[in-house]
Image (cartoon, rainbow, N blue to C red):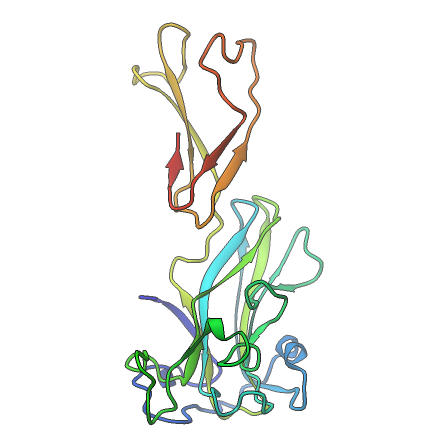
Length: 265
């Protein structure tokens, strides 16, 4: 990530590298968060130093997503030792019962935390950044103080109601105690709700968008302003008195916008 927002359970200044300390962090004496406490569980089921960012968002399509990375100074010494620092991204609104956490280990219903993503558990999503004294080969310790962090993960919620307003709540907290910091990096411009825009125009008459059989050709553009990570299929209805395939070239009732392509004619 080249830019974005960082949320931390302690001091924002403790994020910047190099990884020169084995236990960087500040207990800022902020309270914990009840929702995050319910995710942690275990012997030390208490949270501290919670940081919460929340806002409303009117979605433009049936889904919303963003990219993030979770990191911590709890790695690796305190894995499965009760200090299970945790991050969550809650969404609520039309069609959703209560608040749903969508910051999950890929392919699971497991929240992202110290015990759930590390060098042993879900290790494919973990990057070791050393212990503050020695760094593993190819470590990114020049940039980040934290001893470990996740790969860039994607939080996504489908089956939303387009043009409706949803409440988003991002929260991170220490667990077990408030001593060592954890943080989450939110990639700039990655919070998206891509909607499909339909543009119409004529191909040879700048003064009209109407198509006229045998005279003026028309075109319709199905457009998504930002390239999408997966293909998007648009289904539409064709109406009117003209006959598809006779009065104009045969047109199917679906079109697919490929991944990485901002528009499709």
